[in-house]
Length: 114
Length: 111
Image 1 (cartoon, each protein chain N blue to C red):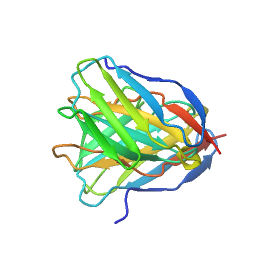
Image 2 (image 1 turned 90 degrees about the vertical axis):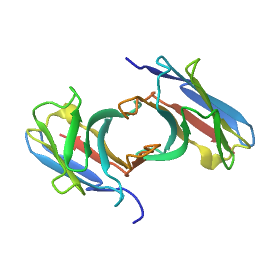
Image 3 (image 1 turned 180 degrees about the horizontal axis):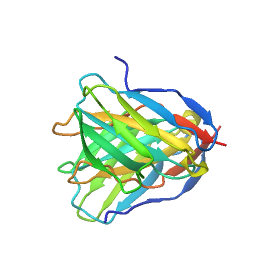
Image 4 (image 1 turned 135 degrees about the horizontal axis):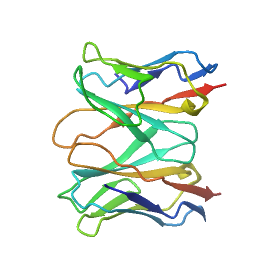
């Protein structure tokens, strides 16, 4: 296992379509995080899981966004009825809930909504 | 609410210089603090993590310090190289284990 992976790396879609992204964390990590980042800004927290439980969701996460981690391993982030304002880099990170909780990030999925 | 500020927002220096990137945060009740590097269009690479009980951490040419009581951290880069060009982000972790992010310092090292 070489790190956190995300697929696809790039996604171009038309406004109103649904998109789904996948994140595979580092295998022994029990925490998984989703962030969104726009150009020139730091990441914004969206949600996180400990094992399969979704423990927190940001108020930034509208009803059109849903995330799952059904078996406590990989996670999916779905955006329904995409809007142009959803265009951003979606980042996934994982950590081992332990004494330091260091987060390791994947390469991100770049979403462009036309 | 924790707020993180990174100064300067951008920095351009000639190769070989030693430099310091600054990070300040408003709430000193942090769990730890991570420094990350981000290349254009890429994900984030963790550089250093400093526990709240530590004063500094070193990795190669990088040294990060933490003064929790004054809400400050610095990232020192020795003998800068063109390959160090990237955006550097500071992220303290709060007591809920969430990272709070600054906007980053964009660093350009000129050959």
